[in-house]
Length: 234
Image (cartoon, rainbow, N blue to C red; front, side, top):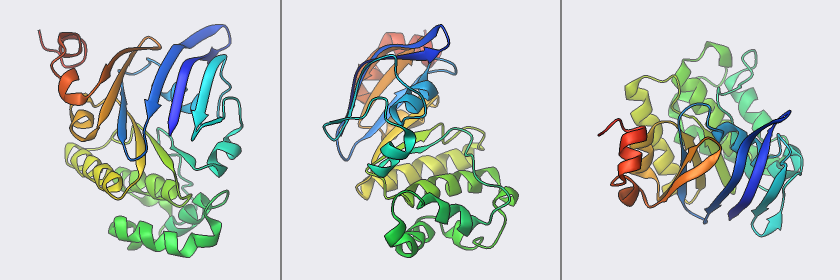
């Protein structure tokens, strides 16, 4: 579904992505892991058209999309739920969801709102409430629900567990697994290695703008480099 080869990008004269190779097959949860500042969010931004690549190729469903603007990638079903949620705090929960269908999914907007309500019953109870008054976990649910409104072919979730309590983190990862079980393809961009590995079918570990490790989670968890660098094990 997504194939990235030799991707390079950065800010000003600073190169952040240094030749990233990554692929995602339909129906997978693929985890892109790494500590803060290694280039994960830059990768998401380049793939979804928020930043222009310096080099390399990005293909989505076989079509070259590198350098296309974000509105064009959204129209193709490549949907990005950004780090930090970025909801509209002065709009209601329902209005935030409706905006998710602005570029894609508008004909099925009401049906998709019902689908989001079924996945997130807590949001349904708060449709008329201003989004800025929601808890952090509810705001993250709203951000994901807004992404679902665009009928994604591939959903990129950028740090969905950040800032959540341990209990809500468990709930968030269970939800992501449920979305995948329903057939949604997901790129999970996360610092939380252990819980990401539990639900992913494949994982890539990024360090200093490069993919350092990749493979099946069970195999990677046995890798001494991953244990030393990311799990704090000797």
